[in-house]
Length: 205
Image (tube, helix red, strand yellow):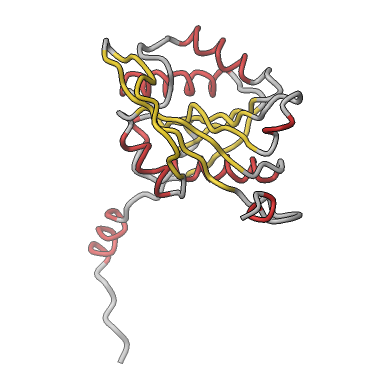
């Protein structure tokens, strides 16, 4: 005997209650149109106000942030990644590579200015963005990603440690925020570029 069909009214109710699955994406950009730039500036100011992700303490406004991001995209050693939630730009991160004259540290890169706007958190977008930056660093041949973070950014710290970043040190006078001196933590993570010798072999481990 076949199972009884769901009444049409109930079926519609179930369909209406199905939660929306947001579309998450991260991309590396070398230029931004005015619409994406406006969204990025709004997300950045929201993150600054909330207290995470940037060295700024006070919101900077669209004009200043536009100059900043356009400058970032002009620097050869910096790569800008933007995060989207349902197509809306809601965060960014930067991958910084050593200059060409720093051959001794060419195997490492730095993850900096990584943040997701407060109104777009809780979907796993920050984790995805960090993974994409790591993948890019590995594809360029880097074997280490370094980062530093204020001690007050506890959510970011928890995420980095979950993703395998190891704390190697703490600077007790790392930053001044609202008249208070705060410490900063320093982290690193080893990468496998996917070609040649393993990172452990290169480092003699």
